[in-house]
Length: 330
Image 1 (cartoon, one colour):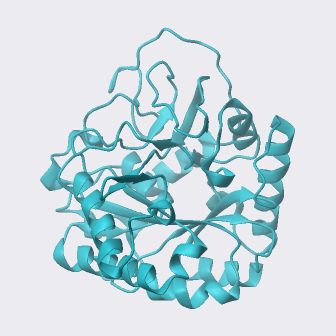
Image 2: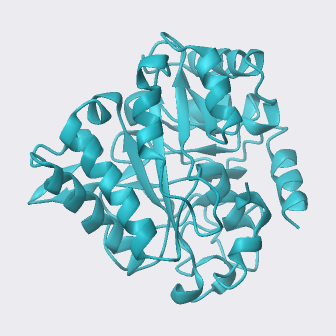
């Protein structure tokens, strides 16, 4: 089944379809159905599964350059195995400048996912700049030996959502999803959002930073990223939480925000980890402790890539059957 789903997803990225229409409601299961459409206002878990039947996904994502200096840090993060015995994996949105593509290929061969961020970390300001940045990074990843069909994700530099300009470039370069939209609205236990598509745009969440897409892009997905709250401080990314001063603080920040997902909608818990964060010893230790703890303490929690999470959304599979779910196997 998952092969059919992936093929359908790949077909959806072939053409860049822009539809300027508003005023039509998205009705889950009626005019918007999986695997290639999900309403942003859909309150249900995909497949209408109960919370207890739903795996909790944790997505560890990175951007910026990928180089040899950081490999030991990445390896220290991804230790605790998933419930099916397979190793946990992360998603890297690559900045070309200073990236070592031999390291990229080595990490890809171990199962990590790669997408595109930018050429030099500067936020594009025009549609053509977006198109050039995404094409350049994708071409470099392909040159490194990554299959084009496996390069599906985009993250804007500095999480500065690019709106229409970004999504035109995203579609033209055959990407499937964006993971740039920060929200301070959908952050509570009962309202965290599952990934959704832009088949309908009247009710899509607004991004805190940059420009929210307000034009239809059928079949293109969004991973919404809730801000983190810790000790009366709010931050878009862990590195921005100034109240994290110890390993215990780092652990508690991650766990407190994870719990809102686990006890609520079970939407994927997306972490945006910077090089500066993992290069600070106590912060890296807190992150590693958190990932090891949730995997050991919660038997239905998985550390997966963004692509693996999206494959699950397109083909919802209950906890009872999840160890046989093809995209999550080794």
